[in-house]
Image (cartoon, rainbow, N blue to C red; front, side, top):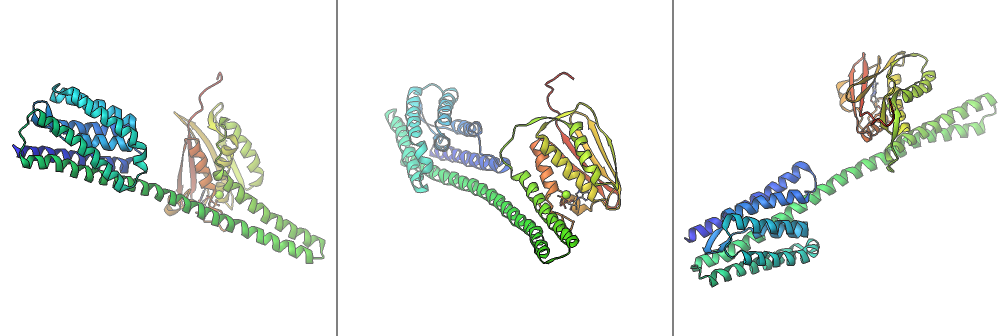
Length: 415
Ligand code: ADP
Ligand code: MG
């Protein structure tokens, strides 16, 4: 008979370990902090298995480890989870084992629920040792409660069985709480790791920003110094122009940088796609007289976002297209309307290698002497903020097509 006490308790322990492991795997796969619902589902399944392998001591008196998932979920996820699991435990006990002594089970779990609810806040902040000690005390007292009823109902328990009944739940409790702490540590570590990655990006941005700004400003300063020494008005004028160019360049870098550090969410508006693109083309065309523009734009198509950002994004892509055709060529701007709107910008320029396509949108990736490598990154951030997608197709020495897919804005007016 004691063989089966041991077997049942060890089976229970195995379910708990597998449950914890699956929980860790779930977290690892989704990278999300588990929701209360997920915790309740995992715990309920574990509790169900524990109850199914419950060991009968005497009529109405059963032992198993169902309390361990209950403790862990209650203490780590708060009173709401705890209450739901308490109801689950009582229901499972009632339907699987039966109604014998159910009032005592209700009393036992309700009192434990109150204790756990009272301690759950302090528990999270406590040190590991304190957590383990608390779990030992509460598990031990529940075991004693259990055995007391076995005694009252004259359960025949051998000395070995007593040992198993006391020691296995305690060992299982200690090991489970240690594993839970380990999972929690790993979760925290992962979070700080990704924060660390973000910090690295920020410091790289800052370093590049100061580099990108210092260069044009230093050259501006140089030309201004030359102006002071220069007597000839015409040359002076040339130096001033060159110095202004440097300031322009620095301003350009800062503007580009501001696009993606601007974290205050602005109100989104309905953007008329054709209207915005036409406005942009009118601005760009005079600056690129060696390029012929072809466009086929659809009327009455709207998307949701900030108009100035949308224009900036399209502007960055068109600028790249123009820069890829130093000896002239053609830009074609098209629009296709399916479920979403797809805007395509094609050029007949130098194209990109596979490596360049792979790195398209990577911060600071540039193949130009005076490039910042921020244009496509800013465009990508804007497209993503509009819940859209950006893709590129390119062939070396043939040309490049950038496609932007955006959701259509919900119609608010007729037409
Ligand atoms: P930048 O223009 O300052 O170099 P971008 O982020 O705008 O930075 O572009 C990154 C890189 O992607 C460019 O340096 C270029 O190598 C490549 N690229 C982007 N658009 C095109 C295009 N239309 N044709 C060829 N190469 C392109
Ligand atoms: Mg660019």
